[in-house]
Length: 226
Ligand SMILES: [Zn+2]
Picture 1 (cartoon, rainbow, N blue to C red):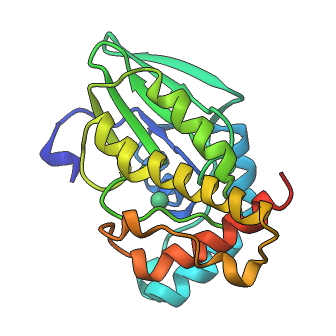
Picture 2: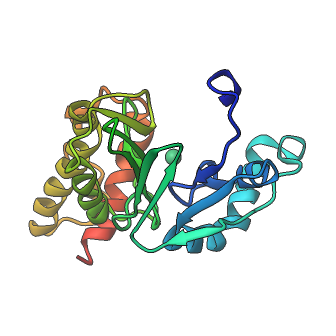
């Protein structure tokens, strides 16, 4: 697919998180000579979950489709920030803290004001708060990303968009869920009823019916300990 955009070789691959679709293609790119970069937290997450992710993919797509896919890890890791220059273009990678997964990063092109957010932003589709997500860290990660005031936002899921849309579909979703959950917990609510906190403002997002209640339970479990 990238061949339709450029004839240039791929020199760098940035894994913006620890979920399968963020890094299990590393082996392919490494074979083609790319240097792979990720945050140290993402690397740890990938190592911890590699075998589980492969087992789940095997069930999902089958052995044949998965043939040749091996866990291959990044050549270069960083703690919080890493800058590289390629063909005169500066590329800044920031790991603001845990969000959708423990090691998420966003990638900023300062000259173009383009932000690649990885799974810190979902657009058009409801985001997923998973066991390994931090809903609190995610809000902070979004704020750190938004502070750059990008003109173009390329989300982890959904079409390229602007900051206002990213804010509506990701930040507003998370902050609504967290503030309503805080009230619910203050009122002595338990996990059973937590699925009923009001998220109806976001019914327009794809997969709302399958994920909204699961997100509520995950956020409840996290906020109980905050
Ligand atoms: Zn994702």
